Image (cartoon, rainbow, N blue to C red):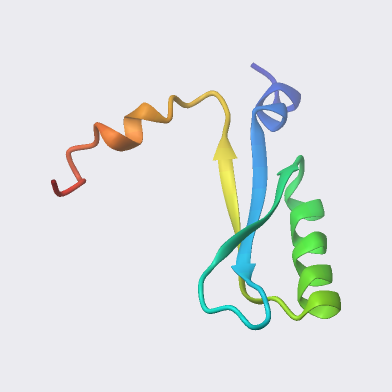
Length: 75
């Protein structure tokens, strides 16, 4: 697998708190590069007053069910 293949399997999402709210919301998805994700985050903060922004990296070739079958999760 080359670098291009790895990059295409990663997606970024931006979360943050919108003005007049107290809980985090998913603000933007399907961002294809870390550089674009950081630029989008900065625009959301500057233009829309988003607070506590964070960028989530999603690896598309990982099975999400692994998260729920983890031994680290307390049931």
